[in-house]
Image (cartoon, rainbow, N blue to C red; front, side):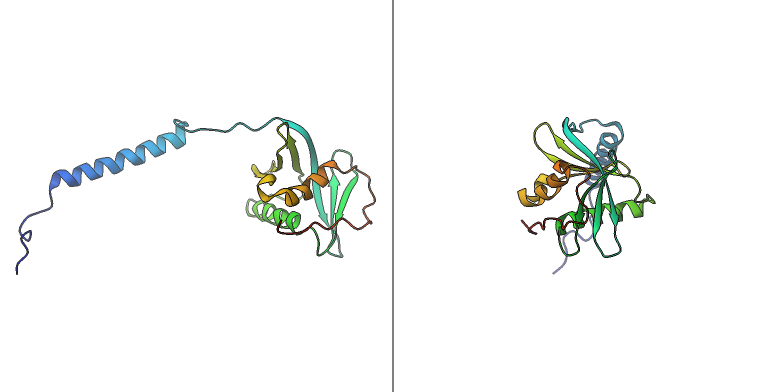
Length: 164
């Protein structure tokens, strides 16, 4: 048995067509990315309430939540509790370290006019929609937005159920 296509080259027109299609696809993707052609952008919702927060580690493993505008303590995240808040902050801190940004700059916690809750890092441009993680987890951050500054930072923080 012999190969009937052994002496026949691959059709040159098909190769040129495939190459042209590939080049056109790459050009369209690059122009969309660079020029914004065909890109749909979702505008940020208007903020109804916001708070600039800093998070400072304590020697005993607790994290103090500070309101940078008022200078007051908002809450204390005790060791072993508030796992969702700690997890989100670890991810944001890792992003800051990889970009050479220090922990001094505050994060922005925002409730939009539509009721959505977001945590923004103005230093890196990251914005996390907290409602996507469920009402229990977004409620942990809502507690920080709604708390009065100057509350007793030595009082144990309410432990938030994790995974919810």
